Length: 446
Picture 1 (cartoon, one colour):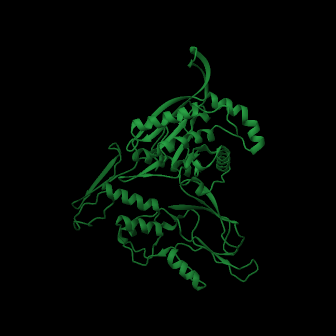
Picture 2 (tube, one colour):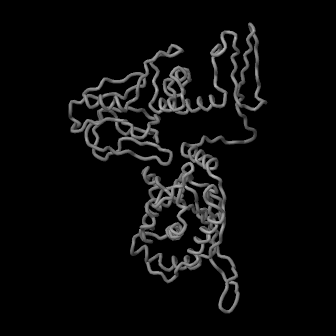
């Protein structure tokens, strides 16, 4: 829906080549570089670093056909308080449709002509915030600009009844000015009375920490991950089922073919494409696991796009997506898995690489865990976790009776949305995946 501008690699007046990186942006899933779609000279930058820009908005203009030696003057980045005059008609047309607008309505506090981004104006319109209200919101952005966070906090406060109301707004000059919030009652409250008016204020006491502590500010991605996890719990009724799989045949097969596979295909084969292959086969049998819920409608996806949770060097997780996994053979799955994993580790993922997932696989065993209770990746309805493969003595059935053998065992678990997936369907699907892994053909050719 939107992206944050992290860094401009080019400035107005700089020559730009086709596909040359112009800037870096951050979405809610991935940071990426934006290449130029044409060659020319960067004529104008419409948004500054740290600005949050809706998808589809023009953020810069390149004069095509221009060269480094052209007479095109440098045009400085516009400040929020002024809009440069266009130098030719096409720029005017683009600017009028997409560029930031200046509101010329006089404000109640005397600060007329305040700047509001299109995103803030859209939120105000959708939430019924009048221009008069908008002008009274204190902005925390550059030069006092009202940011997305500012207006969302204002809307949330208004809905909870904790919005600041100026004296006399509703009941005349003798009205009480009252500032309320939801801080614990232990927070000091101070009251003063003068001329028949009572003013009550809550003062926020800074949080203090005892002992030897280190305070670490969460980075942007960790904050977004935290928000998505909490939102998922609020959205879906999570239930987790567990199963155990004897993956001895699969382990022995991989050990036998991995050197030949790498020599022939130039790729190392891990267990992940084997897990994906088993999941895809079971989704075809139980398609409701490959769906999403839209109000009272179940949207069953015909495309099977498997997301695979991947650890970044920072320790954060990202979920690149294997598109149309059901149309790939084992070699194709292996190449997709390795390509996406390498791109994630080297910060080369594109925004499209993390979009469109319909079911997610997470390997909690890669860090030594034997099982886990993963959180659903919205708007999907299920996520499957595979634990570490461990050798254990297991009772097995043979034609000569029961015996004890050393087997490669693995726990698998699946969290699913209980609004849609009942326990019977969830357990049946999970058991089907376990059986696919157990019945792996150890004599299989590459």
